[in-house]
Length: 215
Image 1 (cartoon, helix red, strand yellow):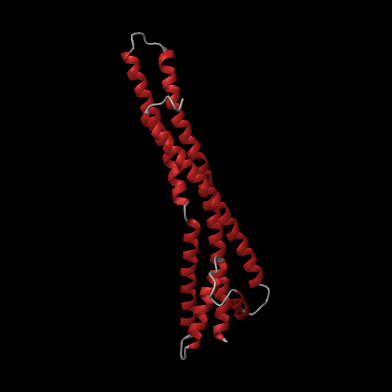
Image 2 (cartoon, helix red, strand yellow):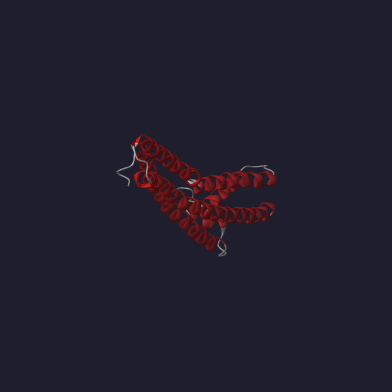
């Protein structure tokens, strides 16, 4: 049916096949990225609440020399700014705290941008693939009816193969769209949960810094 379809329908099928392959690759990569981010957050929270000094924890994650990610990146950015401002003389403690909070918000936004990568593509695939497939189907059906009009004897048997070939495009559109929609909804929820954890940690860390800056 694919080989016998018109060139336009074949082009639509090829496009949908490529989009489906790319979306599946992105789904697999995003699944691993979110899984690693969740595990990294669990590990860092265990280390953070283990009772060690903040300076020791900061040294453990490399004193900023290594690319910390996730919750560790938020902690690293906030504590680095906190230490930098504390070293300056005659700095208002509230200014020190606000500076650390701003830095953590920037780091948090950067981490969420990384987690959100490729999600717009999945949303686009999920919303547009059925319509692309429908375009191929409509085009194929138009060609079938055009050939039917030129035939001396119009029968269902003469037009059915062309319609069946055209409907393959709609099926491929749904095949590309359904996994993309499911993955987008799942990953969006996972990212929102991680964002909530990051924000909660930033607030808790700000409370700890507020107690220290008041001493």
